[in-house]
Image: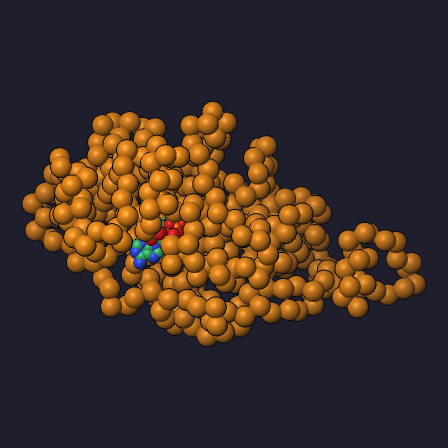
Length: 368
Ligand SMILES: NC(=O)c1ccc[n+]([C@@H]2O[C@H](COP(=O)([O-])OP(=O)(O)OC[C@H]3O[C@@H](n4cnc5c(N)ncnc54)[C@H](OP(=O)(O)O)[C@@H]3O)[C@@H](O)[C@H]2O)c1
C-alpha cells in the first residue's frame, strides 16, 4: 500500500474521483530510546518507520515537507540529557523526548501546503527534522529559500547557524583588531574553521587546535591558518600555547571549554577577549568543568563572554551578503563533511564527539 501510494504521489498519476485513496508515504525518522548522559552510541538511537498521510487539516496553515539536507550539531546532546541548564535559554534548546521525532536545522522541499505563503515544490530552510518527512504546524520556524546559485548543503552549513555563529561570535563578541593574535579551538569544525578564515581575512595572526594531524594539514594548507596543532599530542596545553603564542593571545574563540580554556586564559594578554561559544569537551563528561585562574582574569582584565547565535539574527542579511561575496571570490573555502541517508544520522552525530568530521557535518537525506 505504501509503495502504491508513494508511486501515485511521485509520478502524480491521475486518480479518478471515485477511487478514494489517501496518499501516504513511509516516513523513516530517528529517535532516542532513552535520555543520554555520557557520549552517545548507536544503541541509544532507533530508526522508526511510520505512515504519514500526505494531507493536512482543512483550513490549517500546515505544511508537509521532505527533508533534503539536515545539519548535525553538538548542542543536540544537551537536549537529549534528562536535564541540562541549556534548555531554558531558547526554543531550539528544548528537551528531546525519547521516542519522539527530533527537530534540527536544514533544507527541505514542500510536498503539501495549506499555507498561502508557501507553494508545493518550493524550497524552505529552518527547523526540519532528523527524518524524511515532517508535518510542520503553521509553517513554523521555516522560511523560503533562495539558493542564490549555491549548493543546498551550503544553506545548511556555511549560510546556516554555524556560519552566523562564527561571524557574530568573532566580530561582535571578540571585537578583533588587525594584527591581533587569535587562537581558535575546535578549529576544523563547522564554526571553528570559519572563525579562523574570518580572522585571517581581517588581518589577524591565527592558530587553531584540532584532534588529528590530517586536520592540522587542512587548516594550514587549505584554509590559510598561520599555524595549527594536534592537542591530543600535547601533554601540557599551557606550555603548548606559550610555544605558539610567545607574545600572548589577544582573542580566544572557545569551542571546547575544559583544559583548553584554562590553558588559553593562562596565556591571554592584558585586555584579552574570550568568546565562549561552546564547551564540547564538557558536554559528555559531567565531571569535567573548566576552572580558569581567576587571578589571571582579574589582573589581566580578561573579558570572557558567552553568547548564542540566536541573539544575533539581526546580522543575518549582512552576513549572507558578505559570505556570498567571499565564496564567489574564493576568499572563503566552504568545508563540508556530508553523509547520505536518514539512517546515517546517528553515526554522523556520534562522530562529532569522536572528532570524525572535518568541517560542517551534514546529512543528505534526499537529493530531490
Ligand atoms: N553559542 C552558539 O550559539 C553556538 C552555535 C553553534 C555551535 N556552538 C558550539 O560551538 C562548538 C563547535 O560546534 P560545531 O557545530 O562547529 O561542531 P564541530 O566543531 O563541527 O564538531 C565537533 C568537533 O568538536 C571536536 N571535539 C569533540 N569532542 C571534543 C573534546 N572532548 N575536546 C575537544 N574537542 C572535541 C571534534 O574535533 P577535534 O578532532 O578537533 O577534537 C569534533 O569534530 C560546540 O561546542 C557547539 O556546541 C555554539
